[in-house]
Amino acid sequence: MLRSVFLAAAGSSRLGRLVSSASLSRTVARHFVPGDDVDGALAAARELADDGLSITLDHLASETLTADEAKATRDEYVTLLGRLAAAGLTPAAEVSVKLSALGQRIDEKMAAEYAEAVCAAAAEAGTSVTLDAEDHTTTDSTLEILTALRKDYPSTGAVLQAYLRRTEGDCRELATPGSRVRLCKGAYAEPESVAFQDALDIDKSFVRCLNILMSGDGYPMVATHDPRLIAIAEDRARWFDRSAEEFEFQMLYGMRTEEQARLAAGGNIVRVYLPYGTQWYGYLMRRLAERPSTATLFGRALADRK
Ligand code: FDA
Image (tube, rainbow, N blue to C red; front, side):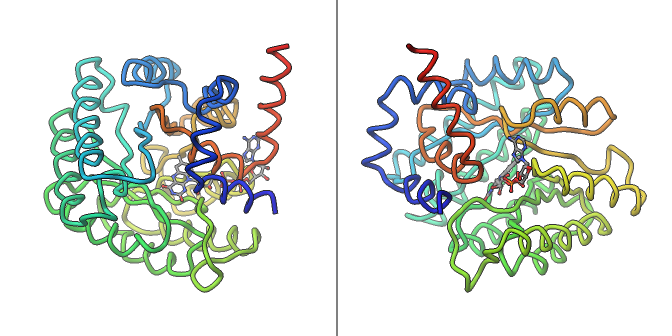
């Protein structure tokens, strides 16, 4: 129930403007989105790298887009990648890109060209790009663009969402040599026709997908905070004889930081997803939808202001 309220709120631009303009909201958002600009993102990335963690940076863009905004997002990533390389943060840091932010909904060809420019900048910077997964209406287009990008930039990462009924099949397609695949549960409100709705069904699908990726020839990136799924991933890595360099864990910035440290101390590669920018409203609402107890952060921030 609360999940659908927060997911509906994520799509409301009116509410977004209201919440984003309140300084209290920014205080809370900073827990998950530490920087407003490249400088802030670089500072947070540096701290994570110093702690032995890998990073993937995501520039948060507005949901409704014009062609000019898409171009600005491309330029932002190109600048970011140059700055990461200059700061010596590559290859520990890579970038995550939402094709919608590059204009996928207004002009698919343009988005593919912009994604290619970002991949070229990443290659120049000595790192790679992962294409985030968005709602199911974009999955086919995103995977097609991924296939095209991988011809010249084979390290371009995919994201597959375990809640989608199609994902086991996509895992089979993508469990090939050199193929980087992030597996997550999925963060959007999806209809029953395409997505499992029950938490247990989603977890079961996650494990089936994990089995395919861990037993396959690609490079699995296990993106979850769920202790049970993390334990199963550790188990499968042992079972399928994968060394610590042959897969990685991924978690969101500000979430389960002790667990991130524990896994890294155990010799695992742990990559932290680090979003930055001023358009943090939709991202924050999706985090609240997953974990309504996060809303207590609002309470704490409110108490701190008194
Ligand atoms: P979930 O939120 O279901 O929690 C399961 C259990 O884990 C909880 O019951 C609790 O026990 C424990 N837990 C979770 N959070 C905790 C916390 N903060 N503290 C303590 N315990 C906690 N989605 C998408 O659609 N497209 C994408 O491209 C991405 N990309 C992405 C990258 C990375 C690195 C991550 C980690 C996630 C994504 N996601 C995503 C989001 C993903 O789909 C999913 O919505 C969230 O990760 C929440 O699901 P979890 O598997 O983390 O556990």
